Amino acid sequence: MVSYSQGDFVPVLDAVSTSVSYIFRVLKAVSSVSQSAIIQISADGLKVSVENSRTVQAHAFLNKTLFTSYAFTPPSRNRGTTIRSESHVSTPGPEEDYDDTFTFSVPMKSLVSCFQIFGSEPDSAGQKSVTQGNSEDGGTMRTFLGGNTVCKMRYDGTGSQFIVMFDESGVTTTCALQTSEYDEISDILLEADAISSKIIMKANYLNDAFRELESTDSETVTVKSTQTPPNFVLISRGELGSVEYKYTRDRNVIETFVSEESVQNVYNFKLMMTAIDAIKLATKISWRTDEDGVTSIQCMCDVGDGRQTFIDFRFLPIYDEYEERTQRTQTTARSQITQRTQTSRDELFGSSDDDSSFD
Image 1 (cartoon, rainbow, N blue to C red):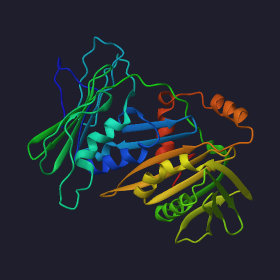
Image 2: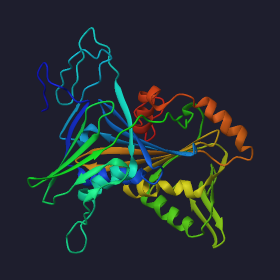
Image 3: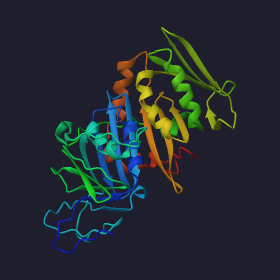
Image 4: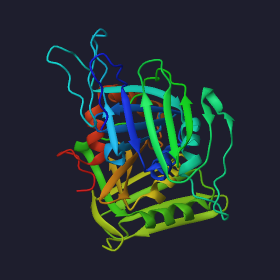
């Protein structure tokens, strides 16, 4: 329980978690996309978003169920108002006006490095490798090793550092990450009312396919789905040869298959491979493509104790008339992340009645 009395300063975020290893793996799964991460805090948890060249985006959600205590206090637009907060609940007064999210940017490499100290697997000698000193991009780190780890996160508001503290058997590591205003990015929108194909499959089969496709050193991958077997095909051709992975509606591999008569798109395979760590972490994959060729690879990851979290990658296809299509996509995707918080969260977790990815 986190509580504050009248007159106390209340941070925007005050959270505690023992799921350090899992948080590290989720962050690492999206870290190859971009050097900068946009963190959005809400009552439901933390959303970490990254983007590369407006052609690939990834959104990872650290649900509040990953935390033993989680207190989000929406900043008041009335700066003279004192806010009270309790664990998992923030209740604004009747005359106060609050934002329901708070967003800022941090260096992705520094964020992952903080969790890597305690979240990575031990080496063969049972020791974790640690470096001391200043981390890159303004993050400072003081490291002392111990046993079981408790992670504490705190963010006080605009201009403050994002503090991540690790307590291990009474000794403490503190990471203080410099934050900045985030650059507004346009969401890569998947048109929920114009889905041309949807495949839900076991993640290990897609992981095997990606590894085989990578062996050709191809720059592109062709993705086909049809109502006639083979129903789902991945093709890569490169200097080292060609690979075709073909799937039929085998319930042991593909749980759900919905497709138009014939759907075919080409993607930048190097960018699509940025999803490989998320695929390895997942138990199930939802692969959806709309009529414009925009693809979502949504990864359902089991945390344990019946808890799940999701990582959603979005990819634009390669078009013959690329400039024309890119301009049209950017026009239709004009709304920023902060303006589509609930919609993005519903798509990520498949909780929307109109867009339930794993239903």
